[in-house]
Length: 244
Ligand SMILES: Nc1nc2c(ncn2[C@@H]2O[C@H](COP(=O)(O)OP(=O)(O)O)[C@@H](O)[C@H]2O)c(=O)[nH]1
Ligand SMILES: [Mg+2]
Image (cartoon, rainbow, N blue to C red; front, side, top):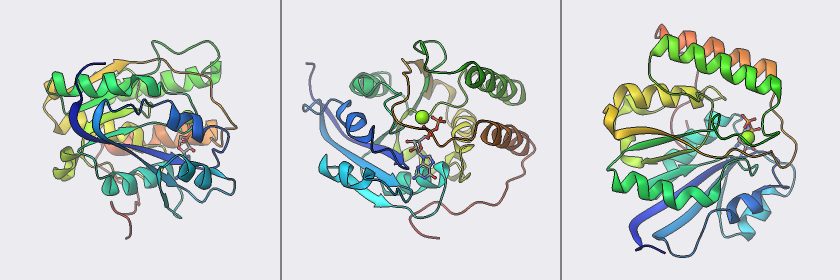
């Protein structure tokens, strides 16, 4: 193992009924002293299964965010995270937790502020259905054409970044739903210095546990949100922190 990174890292994970995968997701991130402090912050959207108890059993901090939405969960989590570096991932074993130390090291060594992970180049067999691939391709291409921001995977949910980027209000994503993912990338590329941001390809694996995602509904919502963003129109959204 290399030298201990002198940073406090908080892994923020949104959950909604992820009892089959939350424990393995948390355990997938090495916790052997590679950084000065590592903690896990689970933002749970009213799970009706054992997700919250299981996460607490792994030593994670669990916050019950009763307001619905993936974006809503992240806005709460970002405002609450105590680490100077924030890492995100889904609670479904799709993202490579074992890569977290390398990604954080890269952020520090290359003096970056923000890394987004691309799933498309290294997606494993069966990780994305044909439909899912088509949807991702459509959204990613539309985002590239509208914003010319040079990101390959507009929908990925694994980011590694310094919490200080949010000192700039323009970098804070606003959407309460799934479109927060593309919005965050667009804002990071527009409002941070280009050479402080990077997209890195990581493995993407088959989901553990049932997905609640509504393929068509979420796909169309993402597409519509891209156009709204492009023309500077913002839909209704709740505020940044724990409470409105
Ligand atoms: N807190 C919270 N988490 C959510 C909500 N919807 C989805 N999630 C979590 O967000 C992550 C991404 O959702 P997922 O179903 O994997 O979407 P996909 O990866 O885009 O297919 C998972 O860990 C979900 O459990 C929600 O309304 N509230
Ligand atoms: Mg997922």
